[in-house]
Every structure is written in structure tokens, then in C-alpha cells.
Length: 345
Image 1 (cartoon, rainbow, N blue to C red):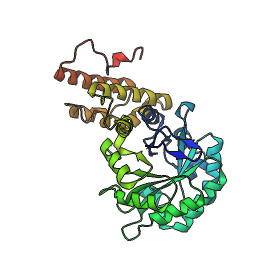
Image 2: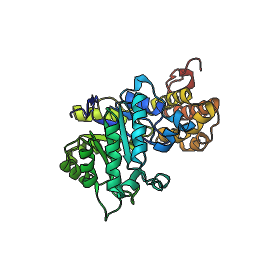
Image 3: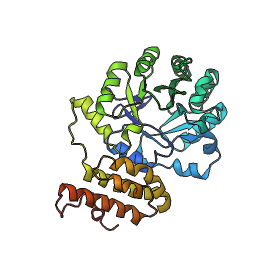
Image 4: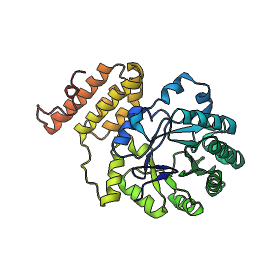
């Protein structure tokens, strides 16, 4: 599979980690990149908050040089504001910028942003043109299939994006009305690919390597953006990459003990960006994804969603590890996944 190109930027492969509000912090991005994502974004940001230097937004946009290439995504519908945000983002060193026209969340839609912008093609075109004209770095857009089944205007929006100078377009082929219900119709992804000449990235319902292979082959698209599919399993990127290159998963999928070790590291990285209490609030969203398939872990999930401190988090994870080891009989001197593996915590 040919690596994706975002204008002058060539990714190492054709796999992208989706920008997700409340999810795509530095710890998440680092793990996605380590396990094979060619590009990751900071969290989706409302353009107004970004321009007004909202305190929370200032924390969310934090990134480090070792994350490059790194992207930023804005949700908004004001061309002038979006253009100014793009100039700021370019000055702050981001490698690429994306316009969000895919988010179905009501608090974004009521502002006329996200997937709500799909209902206003002329305004969307002005937004895209303003963003592209404002900066030299590549600008992309993420869209939905349309507003509803009676308004499937993804081809129209796609052509507008290409005419505006967008270098790539991502489509989540559900309508705004569907939100995340039903199935992503990747036949529409193929129709978008046939309608434009810029790269098309598919998003939606890629949960296993086989899903990615099927979508790429059936639609002819250029890449895959993964969101919910990699929650608690960032190695999904690596597995997809291996299947595309070798026809099978070469590297063994992490077992329960290794997954617990990755979760520990994930939490410790959260502490680099957030104070302990905030880090605990964030890790609650992630922890159950990592442990849901570990035999016997169900009894510990409620405790994990209540953790308030670093020590409490590690105590719960110690108990999960000990319970699993008691079931499978792991040798006592095996420390992978235990708190003891984090020497000098």
C-alpha cells in the first residue's frame, strides 16, 4: 500500500489516528504512533476556544517534537475565524490542519459546526477556501455522507474541498442523522474516491485488520482513519500495517499482562500533561477498554471508574493483575504488567 501524502508531507504508511475530543491527548497519540499510526492529531478543538486562548484548550493543544507529523483539527463555521486559527496553528508548528465537518455531537452541531456544516455547502466552501488561503501547510477536511438519507451531498462537498485546495478528504460514511448508529456504508467511500482526485481516507467501523483490508479493496480509498476501533488496543495500527504488507499479523497481539503494562504506561504519560486528579479522571475513559477482555476483570471495572489518585489506580491494576495470574498460574517472578515493573514509582 502506497504511503499517504498530505501535500508535501509523506506519512510512513496510510493509517491515521482520528482527532477525538476528550481522547486524543499526548499519551494516546504517543501510543498510537508507537504502534504504527502514520499521523495523529491533538483533540478536536472549537475554533472560538482556540482563538480566545481558553485555558482548557491551551492544555489540549500541547504537543512535543517527537510526535511529528502532528495535526490539529478545528470545528467551526466562520471563515474568518477559521483562517485566523489556521495562521496561529501554522505559527505554533503544526504540520497539517483539518476542518471538522463530521462530528455529530449536538453541542457542536448547535453552533453550526461539525456535521451540521454539511447542510450549508456554500458556507462550507467559504470556510475551506479561507483556511487553505491562510497558510502554507496542508489543509484537509473530514466529512460525513450527508445530513440524512435525503441529503447525501458528500460528492458535492468533496468536489468543493478539492477546488478549494484541500490536499485530502476523510469520509465517515454515515449521515449526521445516524450519528454512530447503523453501519458505515463504505460503498459511498468508493463513490467519493471516484468523484475526486485528491486522496480519500475512510473512517468508520474499522475494528479489525480484516475490516481495513476490506474497506481499502472495496472502496479503492487511499488510507484509513481509526477512532473507536483502537481504544484500548493501539496495536491495531501495527496489525493492519502488517496485514497490508505481509498478508497476516506477524507480531503477536499483546496478551492480558502486556495490555495491563501498556495501561500503566498510558496512565504515567497522562501524569506528564495533567495533575494527578485530572489524570485519574481521564484514565477512567481508557482503562475499561484495556481490561474488558481480561478474564475476571469485570469485578474491577467499577473500582477503576472511581480512582482518585495515582496510588489508587496502581492498586486496582495490581489487584487485576494478581487475579488474572491466580487464574492462569503466571510465575511469581514475572513482573511484566505489575507496578513493580515501574521501578522507582
